[in-house]
Image (cartoon, one colour):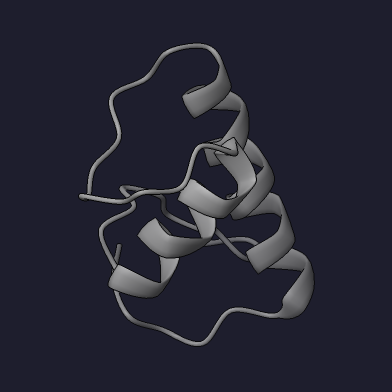
Length: 59
């Protein structure tokens, strides 16, 4: 995931989508001791390893 500035709404959407993926069994992209999907997603976000792209407007 490119390190660009995301709004709090974009960040919430990214974390929610990733937490859902993890809860359905997607592989975790970092080493962590967390067990809750939302906390795992937050750590992955902070590490910059999430493969998400945010498209804005008419791009």
